[in-house]
Every structure is written in structure tokens, then in C-alpha cells.
Image (cartoon, rainbow, N blue to C red; front, side, top):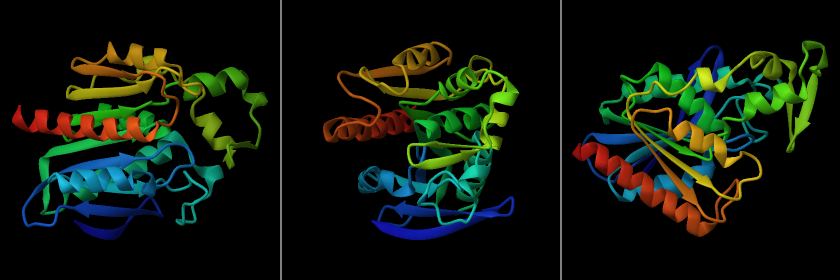
Amino acid sequence: MYLKQIQITHHGRTVNAACYQPDKEGRFPFVIFSHGYNGHRTDFDRSAKYLAQNGIASVCFTFCGGSTRDVSGFPTTEMTLFTEKEDLNAVIDTVRSWGCADRQNLYLFGASQGGMVSALTAEERSADIRALILLFPAFCIADDWNARFPNKEDIPDSQELWGMTLGRRFFEAIRGFQIKERIGQFSGKVLLMHGTEDRVVNMDYAVWASKQYPDARLELFEGEGHGFSEEGSRRTDEMTLQMIRTCMRG
């Protein structure tokens, strides 16, 4: 396997990423991994290595301001779902420009908040993305925060959650946002994976989403929560590989 650190500059900020490639010459299908809230690109290190061993390249990146471990200098208080969508679009454009990338086989893999961002991005880039793989996607984000801050004057200047501080911009950006109006038109294959014991994102969101896309499959992981066990993670890697192979045969 070949590992290379890369930087992608856009909108006045720089995304830090890593590219994992099979140890051979040629053009490869690529998976772009998007981490969850306060996650990091290294969250997918094992998955990317597994795919590289099976002939599939990956890019794992850290959202600017999307993690306390982000080194871009972009403040967490300036991050929104839509700055993260800009980051993901910049990564997609960069991968598509590489000679080693099979542009007909680009896949988005998003976990939790990164799953929601990946789903929103896929809606606009159906022509560029072959399939969408979502791991406990946090389609509840806008619903949860808008219920907590129902009026604009209720929004605080900052709010700490799980060790990271969000700013007013995050909450203002999702006022009036309705997930049920924003996803479901992506025409490629969709794989949703969700735990039955998820206490952060109710699995009803995944069940609902699976019925919106024209070609979606829902896999429920019995007893898994918001963050899978080692066995559950191994299964997600295997299902991801199977999905890509199915698409490439198709």
C-alpha cells in the first residue's frame, strides 16, 4: 500500500488529507471518507488500508473546523454543515483531477455528521458519484438543534458539545432546514448501515431514508450503537467492498 499526505486549499482554508493507494500501477476506484462530529481522518485508517489491499484507493480527510484535532486553523465556531460540504466538494474535485483515479468509480462514505454531509453533496453531484455509503448518518442534526433552539433569539453565541465548541453560524445555517426536502434524488446505489441500539441518531431516520432513494439498501446491525464494535466495523468494511465490486460489475 502507498500512503501520501496531501493538502487541498479552497475558500481560503486548507483541508488536510491522506491518500491510500494499492501498491501497483493503474487507475483505481476511489472512496472518499467523511468523518463524524469532532472526528478525524484517521478514524478510517483501518478501512482505507483494507480497501487498498483489495485494489481500491481512498482519501480520508479532516473537515476544516470539524474537529478539535483539525490543524487547518479554521475555527470550530465557524464550521457549519455547509462549510463541510464545501470541503467535501473540494476533495471530490481534486480526486477527479488525478490520473490514477477512475472517474467513473468515485464513492462517498460518510459516518454520522459526515454521512449527512455526504448525502447532501451526492444530491448535487449524482453525475460524479457512483454510489453512496452511509454509516449511522446523522439526518437528525437540524431537527434536534432546531427543537432545542426553536426561536432565533434562543441561539447562543457558542455551545459546547462532546468536547468541541460550535458557534452561532452552525445553528443559524440550519434554521428552517428540512432533511426530508433535501435528499432522495441521488440516482446511484445507496447503502445505509445503522445500529439498532443507536442512542444518538434514531434508526427511524435510516429506515425513512432507505425508502427515499431509487436504489437503496438498509442493513441494520443488531445491538450496535452510534459507533460500532470491532466486529461491526469489520462487517461495514466487507459490505463497503461488496458494494463497490457490485457497482463495478454492473
